[in-house]
Length: 200
Image 1: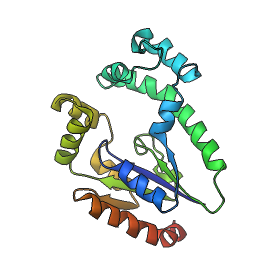
Image 2: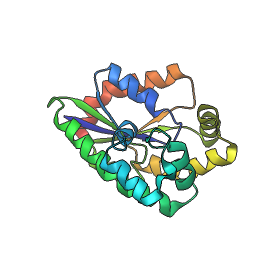
Image 3: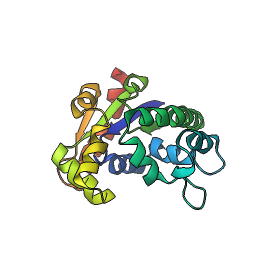
């Protein structure tokens, strides 16, 4: 089994890279997907969030109001750490379950937005970073999420600095070009993966 940790700043293109790797046959374990799963209504995760942040972070149907919670945690680093202490252990446990069920010869790609922030870069055979310059990142985030420039900047600032991610990378994919150019880089990475894994 080859274990790849895929990361990048918010709106950097991680999803596009992950989808391309899945087309090649990789098993994807997406921390963002699992983070939603572990806070569904009725889960211990959602109960813990309500205990910490009150029922003000619940939508009318009892599900988590992610926008309301985001407003709180992106403005308060202590609150964000509290949230992470609830979600991260649950996500890691679920990711371990999924990986355990993967074939022995699989390429397992863990998509983890906060991989560097949580110090996991050495937990994988290869740390793959999707990189984009901050101006493009800001524009993409504002358009994709409908955020003000100020809110988008706050979300970028809440993550590791670009330089820290690049320093942690074994392989960097440059997403400052077209989708086709990014896909070509992913294809090249997949071709080189056996050799890269043998050197890890």
